[in-house]
Image 1 (cartoon, rainbow over the protein chains, first blue to last red):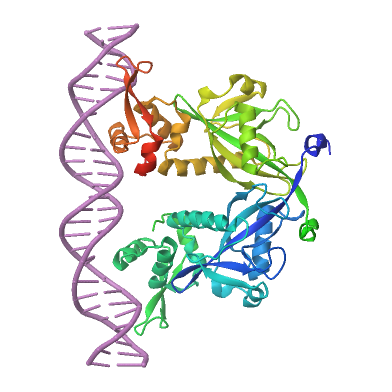
Image 2 (cartoon, rainbow over the protein chains, first blue to last red):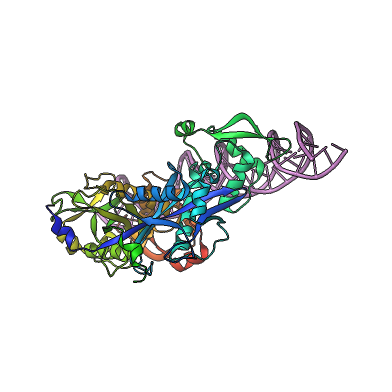
Length: 227
Length: 227
DNA sequence: TCAAAAGTGTTAAGTTTACACCCATGA
DNA sequence: TCATGGGTGTAAACTTAACACTTTTGA
C-alpha cells in the first residue's frame, strides 16, 4: 500500500451499529428492545446492535443487524448519527453508529424476536437502557418526526391497505397530538398518491371503512407531502 | 477486561473526521477547502480531516481538526453523518464522520489557513473533490439549511454587529433565493432577540445602516425562530 | 445634485383552524 | 333500535406574499 505510512500511526477502533426499530401497534408508536439474555449487560434493556465487519459497509452492517432480529430485508432505514464518547461502553472503546428502521410489526419474524428476547415497548414508556441507548432513541425519534412531516415514510409502518382512521392514529402517535378528522382527511384528499381502493375493512367498525394504499410511483411524480 | 471475549473477535477500523467549514463572504456562502500540499492525493481538493485518536471522543476529534486549520475553538458544529463504504478511501479502509462548522471568516487564523493551502470556495462552484467529500458537503448543506430555518445559527457566520442587509444577504446565500426586503424586516422585527444597537455601519452605504446584534439570552427565553 | 443603499405599511391571496351532524351496520 | 366508528363542508382567523416610494449622505 503506497501511502500506508499515512495511516499506520493512527489507532483503530471497534465500530458497531445500533438499530432503533419503530413499529405501529393499534394507536401506539413502539420500539423493539432487547431484554438481554446474553453478555455483556445480561438482564438489562438495550437496542439491537452488532459490530461492523471487514467485508461490509456500515450501512450494510445495520441492515444485517436488523435482519438478524426481524428477518426483514429491504427496509426503510436512516442513519441517526455516531456516538463516539470514549467511555460510552464501559467494557471497551466502541464507536457506534445508530440507525432507525420503520417496519410493519406483523411482517417481522416472531420466532426470531422471541429468541432474542425482544419486546415492543411504547415510545413514551421506555425502560432504563444501557450505555447511551436512551439518547440514541431520542435522537432517532426527533429525526423520524421531522422526516415524517415532509416525506411519506409512515406507510412503512402500516399494512399495504389501511384505513384513514389508521393513518390518522399513526400520525397522532408519531406527533403525540390529536388532529381534527375533517381537516386531516382534507389534507389526505389533496395527495393523489394516497389512493382509495374498492376494498372495505370491516374489522374496525360495523359500517366498514374504505381501504387506501400508498402509490409510490404517483408520489415520485407528484412530489408534495405535508401533514 | 471481564467480557473481552465479546469484543475480541471483531475487526477494528481507522476512524476519521472531516470538516465542512461554512463561512459568509459579502454575498456568498463559502466552504473552506484544501488544495492538498501533502500525501495522499496531493494536488487534489479535499475537506480538512484527521484521524480519531485514543484519548479523544469523535466530537473532540472534529473540534481539534477544525482548530488545527482555523485556530478557532468553541465553534458551532453539528454532526453530518458517518460515511462507511468499504472502498471510500482507496488507500485503506477508513470510516469517516463528517461535521459541519459555522465560522466567521475574519476570525480564522489566516496564517494557518495559508500553511494548509486552504481556500474559501463558493458553495455553488465546488471543484472536484477526493473520495466522497462532495457527497459530504451536499449533505452538510442540506442539514445546515434545515437547521438555519428554525434555529438562529446563521449569526455564527456574521460579525457580532451586523446590518439587516447583511443578514438578509446571508439568508439569500443559504437558500439561494431572494427575499422581499420589507417582508424580511417584518419577520426580524418580530424576533426580540435580534436587537437594534445605537451603532451605525457606514461602510456599506453613504447614509449608513443601523447595526444589530443577536442576544442569545433573550432567545433562550423567547424561543421562536422562523425565517 | 445625484447615485446608492436604508428604511418603511397596506392589501389581497392563500392557508389553517374550528366546528356538528348524518350514515351504515351488526349486535 | 341503538351504539359504534365512518364519512362529510363552511366560515373565521391567521399567515404569507406582493408591491413603491421617501430618506440620507458622500462623492
